[in-house]
Image (cartoon, rainbow, N blue to C red; front, side, top):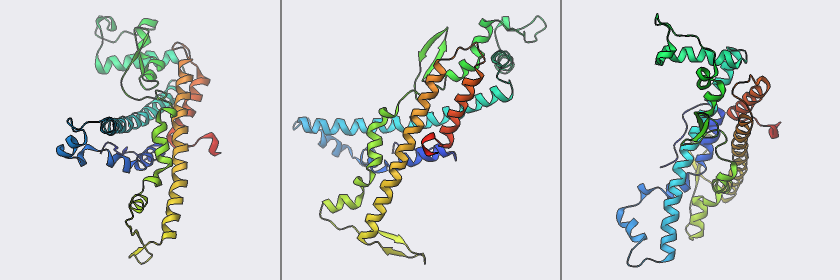
Length: 284
């Protein structure tokens, strides 16, 4: 299966896991592990190939690929949120929103841990303290955050595309197909599928005594209604998380790396904490 849960207890991880859980039927039906080579070859029989079979095969392959991107992307988005929050909190708590203080100290710590160039050391082997822009530009808060926001990092003053998902790399509209599937999850339920085939399906639930008892049709309809309400909430919260990530990117790209930007970085911290805790303005 392509969809792998995020191992974290943050509200954001729980939201993303719930989003992926709502796609479990889609995941299973498009997972190649459930196909044999014979079945696969038969579905795209070269001797009997037609436009419909080509379309069906392409759709199955494409959906499987999209699910892999979704699973990896949500994990990367979650990790980026935590990393950006960590760096911003350090910026305010340890460096008092001083961009140069952050950059000079982070440079010293980096050289101490990973080593540096000849120019980074004094004759006695101690690390040379430098404050010029060329020495500091790769250690600014802005540079550090750039690897987690918008899918870009800085190299010689240029934005370079990198692989994977960051805050603001994708918009909610880029997930539109999956958002629709989550909102309509009950339409893919085994109960409805078998009902359309004219085959009865008896569902069960655990009663107060711990025994399994059959669910009535009214119980099943009520459960599906609750699922629909839950999935609407999941889809709305998911949309807010992704779009707030885009707000982080827009704010970030308006900032200069050689300025403190105390108010702007404070706003950015608020955004990422809203994403992490899944507490957005429309819920207040």
